[in-house]
Length: 435
Ligand SMILES: *Cc1c(COP(=O)(O)O)cnc(C)c1O
Image 1 (cartoon, helix red, strand yellow):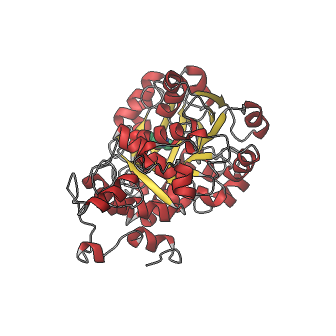
Image 2 (cartoon, rainbow, N blue to C red; image 1 turned 45 degrees about the vertical axis):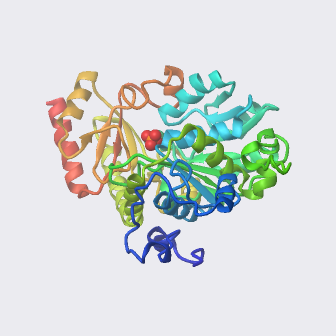
């Protein structure tokens, strides 16, 4: 069944699911099997070389996980996807697959803390350097950071916790002028609010732990390939070098990922080299929870945006709030960009600088009862956290300041509770903090 003509909300329930294959089950079965019968030696050979995409061993592919991959590829408008055990695995695989072999990355400085730490302190151990650009929308600065060995540009659609929006279309144009792919972390808005591939992004990654799963009950990540970038054009020799794993040594037939898979070279390399080697596969059960979560993504995210907007408006002029950050109501001065790029809203994350002492801020966080003190976002329950001490702890102070993560910043992730209860909870917590 072709699903491309269906609306997003319909695809969220049906895309990538082959009912014939699963005894017409309404809910995707959990294929709790480590391995699968290859049936014949001939088919085993085709499966092992990637010539046939099927199931032999769950570190490479599993039917439950496959449904999730197909569904998210469809929802993001990509040609293929690889699901991983967490968002960090997806980000690591996506960036390393582009920059492996001594490449250089140009990245936004405003990023998820562990992404900054990976590029700042860990990838250099593997010979991959990153230049962080303070303002990713300053295209002159981005262009200046590009080197002959730059293999990828990386940014988040909506930065967490500042909610600053990356102008993906302009950044993609610049990247492509230099023959470089644009990789976008689309975790905060989810594909319901923004589809970066339509704006020119070449690869989209997610922590599916967040808004996609939506209930705080499973970790996951995904790499989605647009199929639009030409990885054989010259800047990425790993795609044109011959590789035994996709070749037939016995018969002297040699292939590179580009010659074997064409437009799918990148996503096949992520699966056949990265997933197969590092093994960060999601369990079938976690993939199942993510598929269930996806079924209500439209309804959840829509309500969360509505509540987040109300709460942002309540906080914006509050006497104990120094500065509110929610680009959805214009606090980042990006009204036109938000309107064209994210017309349905920027997501459920917002943040504010608390106007009080450290002790008062601790009292405020401890006093909330509807909000939970949890380092996560996109949950159906509302969450509160102090990023400087928790989520951005490993980020050097300079980059933390660029990301607007001051010591008195508080981040909220708005869930599905009644907005009145959430506002009342914040109000009583302010009273406790300053009482
Ligand atoms: C949470 C998050 C990640 C990391 O994902 P995990 O699933 O926790 O590994 C990456 N990017 C963003 C924007 C996130 O919010």
